[in-house]
Image (tube, rainbow, N blue to C red; front, side, top):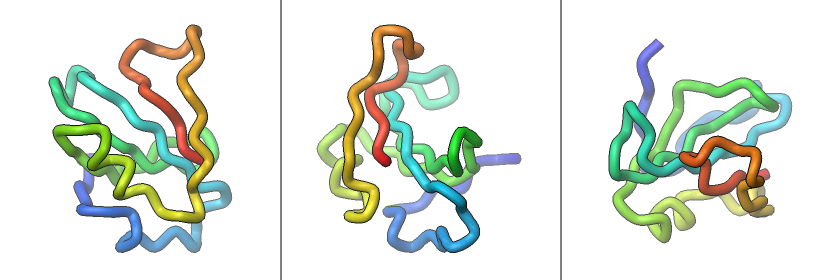
Amino acid sequence: MSDKTVRNFDAVDLTDLTFPNIVVYYNTLDYPNVYVARLFDMDKPTNVVIVKDRFEEIKKSIPRFISNKIERSHNDPKEIVCLYV
């Protein structure tokens, strides 16, 4: 399944998701040298992503109802920046 890139998550229908959350990554193998915010349903990744050059741009694209930011744990993969729930 290929990724569907959107400008912001406000345009995405989340009604079928049990617990939408967003994981922000930086410099992954498939998206080198950019930030990627991937929509998850609970612990399952979806194919919906936002790709930006700067983290500040990613922050602006996070919906208000998914506003709690959790910093990455030292156990997380190094590409993970944070999680929004």
